[in-house]
Amino acid sequence: MTERDSKLPVPRSNPLDWNPLGALVMRPWYDRLALHAVSRWYLPLSRAWAAALAHPDDEAAFAEACGLTAFPGGLTGSRLRRAIAKTRQRARDYRSADERWLEALFAPVAPSDSVLVARERARLAAASALMAARSGFTPIRRRAAQVRWRMTSPNDFAPPQDWLGSAGTCIAPPAGKGSAAPLSPVEVSHPVPGPFGPERWLRFPSPGLPDDTAWARVFEPADVENPPSFINLHGIGMELDFWSGAIDSTASLLRKGLRVIRPEGPWHGRRRIAGCYGGEPAMALGPEGFLKLFSSWAAEAGVMTAWARQNGSRRIAIGGVSLGALTSQLTAVAAGDWPETMRPDALLLVATSGNALDVAMTGSLARAVDYPAALARAGWSPEDLGRYAPLLEPRGVPAMPAARIVMTLGEADSVTPFDGGLALARRWGVPTDNLFIRPQGHFSVSLDLNRQPQPLDRIAAILKEE
Image (cartoon, rainbow, N blue to C red; front, side):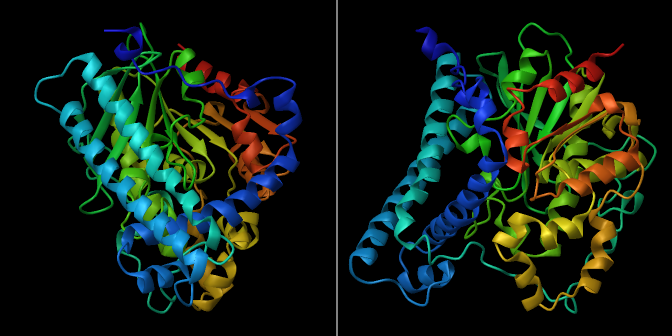
């Protein structure tokens, strides 16, 4: 067995982590390009890709799902047929690789390390190929919809009563408030040898989404007994377990001696809903989408917190970037009403805002996908939105003291506008040493964490304090 076969590879180095290149690129001009790439390229291609997966044999249904009046003819139509066929084949290849992966990772008896590594390599290669099939739909990139809207009008929208949950948020409190709540049964995979230590997957029934399974990948630092844990929630559309070479801060945190739990958010990755791309329902369903996502993901984070505590972590932090930060800050407030075993001890927020209406109505990504216009077409007025804003905003007090909250904000952030994040930091009394304000935008301030790791250093130091 060669060294290559015995463990997963070390993540490729990201050139943007190097100086002076990173210092030149990770600036507000990059954020303008990134916003254009996401809104005008990635989302339309994703919409066509999802339509192809849902309607591989029905050209009229495919066109309707893409927002087209009819299936294109001529050369464009021929190229689309080839792209649809390739997407369908890659979906079959992925399902086959995933089935073999599941058989090995959750087998009654652990296979050899070489088998586990080979199955994970094959799964990731097939997943990446499937995701990359989006490129075949470039011919309709300018005509395809970005989001397939499915909003309910405010008159027909009746949120469940339990959405008025812990501390006035949309997060329902766990059963047995103030005592040891029953923990959802968490199944743990066999460990796969990773470059920095063993890697496992967790799965358990989602507390907030019936008939859905919550997933998380757990990275353990080598030779560290009972490490503190960081539950790292991702941004919208981020499906790190499906892209080879995806960039995040996991390796950096592992080197600091932390266990990293990287959940797969509702409607992302293997939890993607048929006919949708990763994360699309959160936008497509309007306020209902974000309420469901926040409520479900927060409850899942509570289960993961309890699991980490039961598995040796004395301190646990929750946090993330963008959508992950918005979810984490609501969780931090709601957790004050939760049993102690499910309550995180620290919080890391990157590119966040305490003003949900500002993000929805004036945020540059929301405007780029015409979210405010879609709300208006569905009959949502500012007054209607205002009624639900308290459920979506962290208006209460977080469960952890201010000294254990770390925030990183970009002064040029227009997606989750900077003023809303700064106001939250001031209201919560985040200490100056824990507040990192950088002359960057939404994408650059998060992608630059490996080159400028001071926020990661700070949360690691807080988790290791005696």
